[in-house]
Image 1 (cartoon, rainbow, N blue to C red):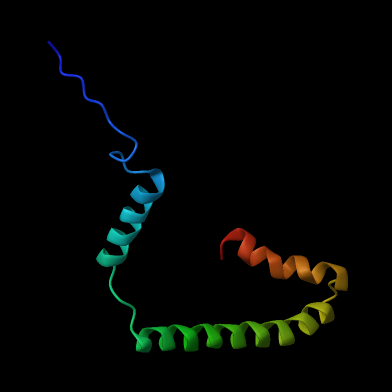
Image 2: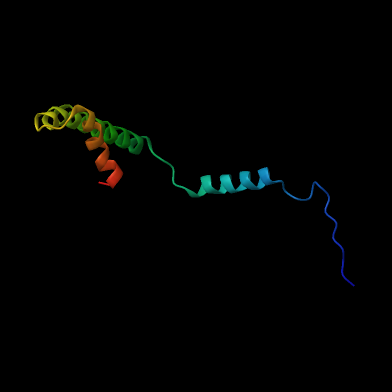
Length: 85
């Protein structure tokens, strides 16, 4: 004879509770981010932005000087990210 188990609505965790438990365990398992690391990331991305701005500022007139139409310059700048370079 099989025992029948009856669950009341309160016995089973809801989907939100299960997701909340998984989120809490993920937060506990990952390392804490230090202020020094966040500062280093911020400075490095600021440097990347400066380099990209200088490249755009000096590269665009050079490409136009080579004879590239102004309407095609944005396509040249999109070629690198689109190709994965």
